[in-house]
Image (cartoon, rainbow, N blue to C red; front, top):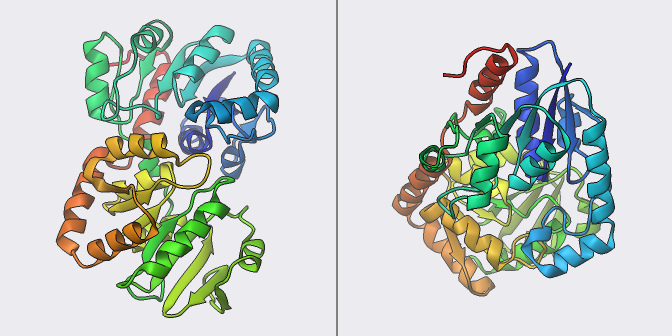
Length: 376
């Protein structure tokens, strides 16, 4: 028998993989994964078997953010991918339980094509932004054995609507992985340009902002291992410097920008302020008590809709600047000179995101379900 994890998004893959890895410590059942977006690299990095993969579509999993994204995905084979995913689900026989991590579409797809108990972890929605729709509530009531929302506010609302919901913490806070490394630079600001195809153009905009700042000189940029550092440097008008701990160092005047691959957790732990165009990354930084400054980016994901949605989710933990590069730079400067304001916003971020430890509590609950014990 096997436990199936299904996730629909790159961030969701990472969260599901963290839980799957923890669950593997508690059960002898095989754990397998079906990522609905992309190749499921996050699973493989943690030793979880991926049973089906497909090419990444143009939107990078954000077709819902606009008709342009949806049209591009449809033209690139979205419907064919969905058909293949349905076929895979229907072919699975020896599954004891499915764990759906993501949004209600994930729950719908699995429940329609796999007749097994489902644990649903709705990472994509929170009452801080907007409550679940009526049809989503009906779907959760009928198809989910238990629902594990990302915050207590959402869990309480779902319980009032007769959904079996429990708040056990936020998996995002278990997927950060800082080490003991300490950056040898004074007062760095963390930078999250995004991990998908948007990172290159996002970082170009961010460099223009950094040029206009006047208070801080050192910026730690968390770029994915897949980011082509040399290609980016070749088209930049910044000078290249030498640095032992970073993949590359960019210099202009007094400003120094360190491009660091595989150091996301260390960066958001070290920085006291974060400039971010990341979905999950911005939220994790806020959860660590770091105020996040963001703006409407040039890429696919961080458009006005997404930015305002994240702003609602995180409240005053995030500062959404709807202005030009100079306005963003001035916001960074203002926060840099006001540690009390940073502390106030950081406390809100911790409250909105919750504490770590969700992976252990969720794995314990799933183990109880597998062992056919009563869920209290």
